[in-house]
Amino acid sequence: MTIKLKTFASLAGAFALSFGIATAAHAADAHAISVKDAWVRWLPNNLPAAGYATLVNTGDKPVDLVDISSDDYGDAMLHQTVSNGSTQKMVMVDKLTVPAHGQVAIAPGGYHVMLEDAKHKVAPGDTVHLTLKFSDGETLSAPFVVKSPAQAK
Ligand SMILES: [Cu+2]
Image (cartoon, rainbow, N blue to C red; front, side):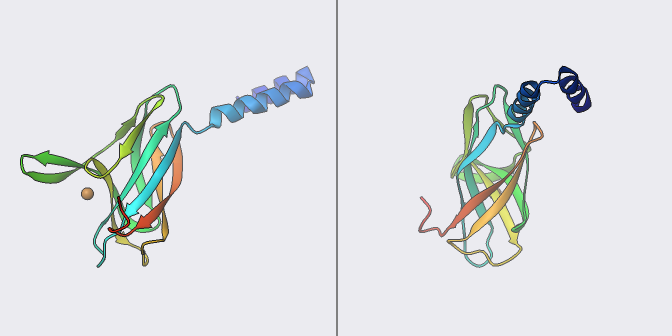
């Protein structure tokens, strides 16, 4: 594909044409998904932390969040808090769909990213990074601000 395009460009001999192709390729690479308001609710004594963020999709197609990992934690999993009468439990979530031209909140009371086995000391004020993998092949490394329970809203 790339070779074909290059050949075509050189045959045409037009600098403007190859510039046009480069622009089109860049547009195709543009990330549909972005991450905002990303933070971690830190807990003392190496208790599991919870990551929260809003995923925004500017693309024309829904995109699924399919995997989460982190260089800062041994384990990062997407969980959903489910109310069951008076009790609450957490269930694993395989994928989370971000609607086209929409957003989904990973927020307290709903979804959270369970973060366990911190690989180094993590404290409020730090920034950790989560790697989010999406069904369109996109991978994002997003900074999450670590907050103490008192700082968390
Ligand atoms: Cu959990």
